[in-house]
Image 1 (cartoon, rainbow, N blue to C red):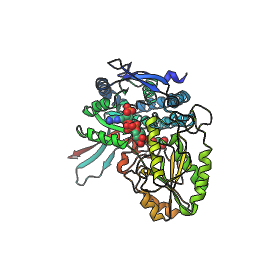
Image 2 (image 1 turned 30 degrees about the vertical axis):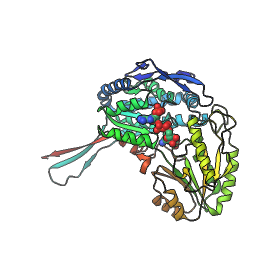
Image 3 (image 1 turned 45 degrees about the vertical axis):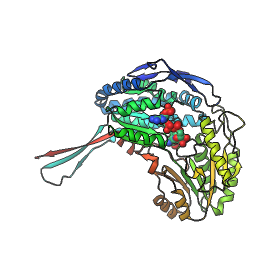
Image 4 (image 1 turned 135 degrees about the vertical axis):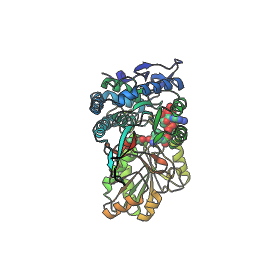
Length: 481
Ligand SMILES: NC(=O)C1=CN([C@@H]2O[C@H](COP(=O)(O)OP(=O)(O)OC[C@H]3O[C@@H](n4cnc5c(N)ncnc54)[C@H](OP(=O)(O)O)[C@@H]3O)[C@@H](O)[C@H]2O)C=CC1
Ligand SMILES: O=C(O)CCCC(=O)O
């Protein structure tokens, strides 16, 4: 097979691949050169309402399927992903731009989420709780929440859907998914993969088109009992307001502004490895990317010298070329946003150690960049960069580092490098984040609950906690025993 075989240019609604009612389409481009690679339907309210009806109809049958049958379907979905890993990865790189090695990893972690939740579903246990009075028993049982609306971003177009779809299907929920318009094919491929695995019609539906119209239809529908979203904090807040009208459960994986703190006692080479992966993975377009690198004064200059050497050695180019470590940015808006961060830092006294400009490859390529002399009044101290800019701040004490690291409305991931065990515990207790990497710059894994605090969101994806978001608990009181 070729990647084009997975490139579905239609929506999946109730088991049928269909266009928009209007026949209108949207072009999808390759960010490497802006060339059109295909089109998708410009769906909206009516198409979404039909998808919700299909999911609503499919729900009771799917919910009541035996647990083992549901788990077996997930295993087949896992195999479909891994059997087609290379083609799905190439499709991802062509529409999104990230290097093939990262796309291969993204498909693999998506498959791991499916496998993990196939295993976890068998442990979705309820409880029998001791009652306070005689003659009474208290049972707590878990039930699939119902139809789930999913809205996902362009930066991880396959794995962001994986960690929503897998627990939903594991618990017997049905799905209406809306992938990002810039990278819709990896999302549509989940429809094709579910077909291949043998899911009943209507269990998995995928609609593309107007974000506002599709999300409005989801929000207004009483049948949609849960909304799960990954994307910007701004849109997340809007969706939370919309969900209030029908009191839907919400999960929000929103923006981050991760501090990456390196203490004098750290293993500097390990810290550099961690900073490289945390900062430059996916060209910095990751919600858990290091956004602010705080380095203690004693090792600041040595750290910057090593980071510069590694950054300048990075190969930038088309993600499909061998050895490329950084692809293009998603679009011109993203490039302009990054340029604005650089200009702001320069105007406030920041020094460009390397990079700082558009890349000679043109288009949306941007140079991997390091800025030293970063201060809390620079824009990136408070906003998500979402690009290959590494601002380095200097600090003196542990207390100062914790205070600066927490100086943000975000609270998704943070990182700290130290060889002092006591300090590691103090950091864990002091840093206001949902996830912390101690001596690690790459922490995403299926076994652990991914999610933020403060304005970085609500709910967890992955881990045993990842199932809870797709479950209603019911309390049964049995009296007169
Ligand atoms: N936490 C994370 O992982 C992510 C964070 N971001 C942050 O957000 C910034 C902007 O990126 P962007 O892609 O615009 O992120 P958005 O939050 O706008 O997009 C994410 C998803 O939400 C959809 N969407 C957009 N507007 C609405 C709306 N009003 N109602 C419902 N759904 C909507 C998008 O659809 P469509 O594609 O059709 O517009 C897409 O499917 C980035 O620079 C980054 O800072 C972005 C992506 C992921
Ligand atoms: O950027 C995101 O929204 C999720 C990051 C997933 C990962 O760390 O692989």
